[in-house]
Image (cartoon, rainbow, N blue to C red; front, side, top):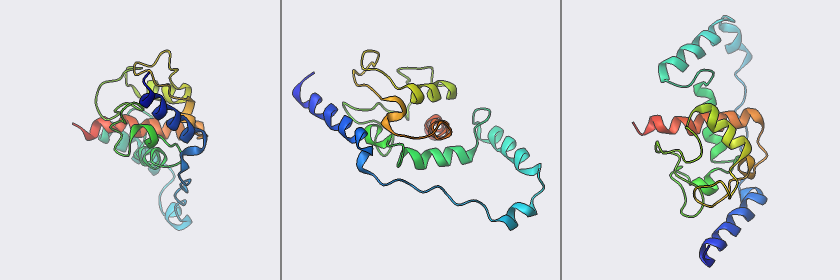
Length: 159
């Protein structure tokens, strides 16, 4: 590894270790009780299932998860630090997540979840750059699933 790549890697790892220097994003506020009471109890599940099928999202993934994942990707999960604000990758750091080329998995939703949970060791990385588990952030398992939903959805935007 040349000196420039080593410096970039050290900088990226330092950013990951300190949380990327970004502020944590607050979660959206819950829906008002009056709005929840107005809808029948079974309706949200029916709408979520219909929305998943209509948008082509994987089973169990909702648009709300994709939206939360977008917020996390650009905030608390610090994915943008290596993969860029547009998720198209950063030279010498993170790979492009917007194309259909998957270097370390088959690109399925479940595989993306697993990859975010476990990371990619430098010894297995096709780019030679490691990705720490959860990108080095302290996001929860549910937040990992939301980030994976967002990453998975990026391919839909490029069709």
